[in-house]
Structures are given as structure tokens and as C-alpha cells.
Image (cartoon, rainbow, N blue to C red; front, side, top):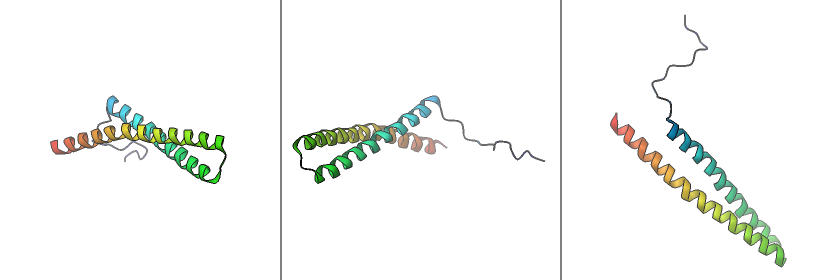
Length: 95
């Protein structure tokens, strides 16, 4: 009789500390991407419905910050994604 509450046996090794930290960093970088996207879209929508000079300059600055957040997060997500793809491909070829 087996213990049904026992954790399943797997042959997969746990992720290394380096790989685990990369995955955590990448998760937080997606927050920057979605935050920048929300800021950019929100400033465009609010900017099209108002016509006050000071408000427009604030929205332009906010939109610029949102676009910068998008570019920085894309620039930091892509290398980690490419690295993960190449590493996974190499490991699959080894077996």
C-alpha cells in the first residue's frame, strides 16, 4: 500500500540557483513591461480627451516615461529569453 500524500517521484533535477534567480528577475521585468504599457495607453487616452496646456505637458511626460519603461523592459527581457531558449535547446540535444 502506498502513501497517497507522498510527493510524486520525478527524474527532473531542481533548478540551479542561477537559473532560479534568472526566472525571478524575468518575472519582475514583465511587471515593468505591463506597467509601461498601461501608463502609455492611459496617457494617450487622457491626452486625447483634454486640451489644457499644463495637463498636456504632464501627460506627454508620463507617456514618455511609459514608453521608456516599455523599451527598457523589452531590452532586458529579450536577452534572458534568448538565453533560456538556447540553453533549453542545448540540453535537449545532449540527451
